[in-house]
Amino acid sequence: MKRLLITTLASLSIVLSAAANGNERAITVESRATNLSDQMIRELRLNNYQANKVREINLDVVAKMMAVEAEFKGNQELIEQKCKSICSERDVKLENVLSTVQYNDYFGDRPHYSKFDKEFVAGAGQTTDNSKSLANNATANTESNTIN
Image 1 (cartoon, one colour):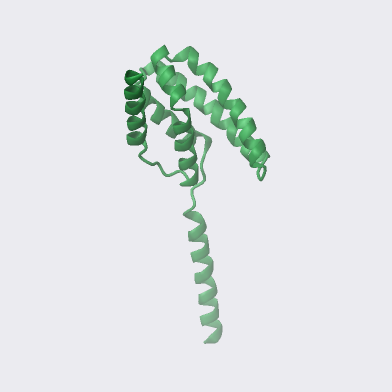
Image 2 (cartoon, rainbow, N blue to C red; image 1 turned 90 degrees about the horizontal axis):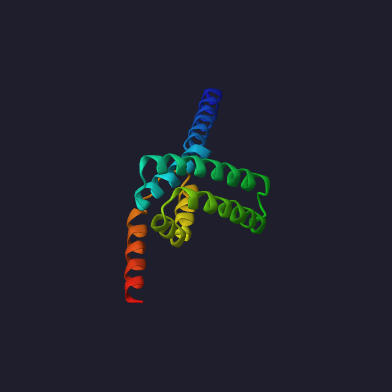
């Protein structure tokens, strides 16, 4: 009887630990890039051509960033330095795709897009609704530009 109880408890603990590990969502390059691209498409009001190009650019950028994050895990300073370089390349590519107004909006909101991406990663791939905060920031930028 004790063996049966011990075996049952051991099996139950194995099943529960496996279920707990299964709940953690691995973030893929595609999901991370899609999340960021969707936010940019909404906020910058991109047309279909621009949206497709932004998706391609972000897919490439996120793949490079995740490779850097995996390679230099534990060295946050080096990761940030290399990711900054990768994002500079994205800026150049986006400048060729976006209109001047869209690029200026993007360029001013880069810290917010970065924060949006970091929150997505920290939330293990769960989308958050930051469209309101970005929209509020865009309104504040517009208001400050008209005041000056």
